[in-house]
Length: 333
Image (tube, rainbow, N blue to C red; front, side):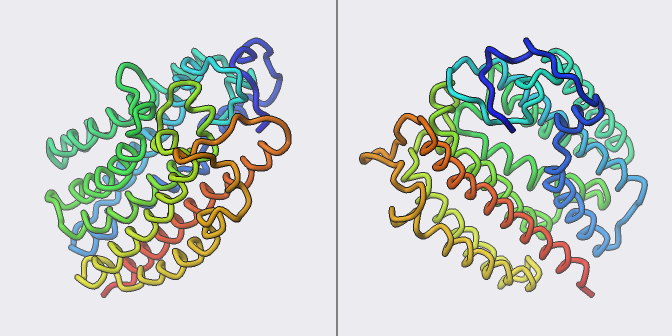
């Protein structure tokens, strides 16, 4: 999208297709991060002899509503918070582009959260009170990800909250809804998903270090600085790979998931020039703290474009992990 400054938000209405505008706001292309953990929980429960199609559909719809609410609330509260002069690159951009009024985005967020709560409340009447507890945990993380007074995303806790919410909370909640109990295997299956969905946020935050610092959004990357953030990016992949190998060796993950180690190796190879300080964008890091210099001109935009590949590679790791996990679970006898 074309970056805009916060002062332009909502001041220049943009004519267009309202349906297309709301699709842009809802960002459905990211819903795979909800579909995968729900499918994982369902496959594990079905393997253990528990599957109810109606409960499965309601679980998926409730989880998708929560994801939609998270996206909308993040758009609204980021718009409220952003007061800097740097171009804004985050979120869907519908507020900054004048396509949807801020208050309409806020109302839509509350409606989708209400739908998610209603789904969880109904499921709890069928499957038990713990389902409602999982729902409330998810809602608290989703709303306060960017909403005051907590603002997890502004305190360096975005990755933790997102990983827990879209890993163990969804997988275990889905499994419990079907089976009426928890499962060590479900917890194990949720861990690589939790790691890599959080990794997407981390990778996408690296190009935004300057903007985030200016607006007081102290993400993990903003605290580390560019150079150290890239080092952590590499370490994250290595540690997740070791965990996947250990869990597969223990029989808690499908052996097929070991193929993900090949994808991890390819990503590490692509990141190596940045880590070594010789690749594109590496020169933006300066000093022991690794802080990037103030952006300006085409060079800064080229550097941002190169660093944006980190988020795309993180997404590729999540997608390949989710695909291998689902196939591996589906092929079990």
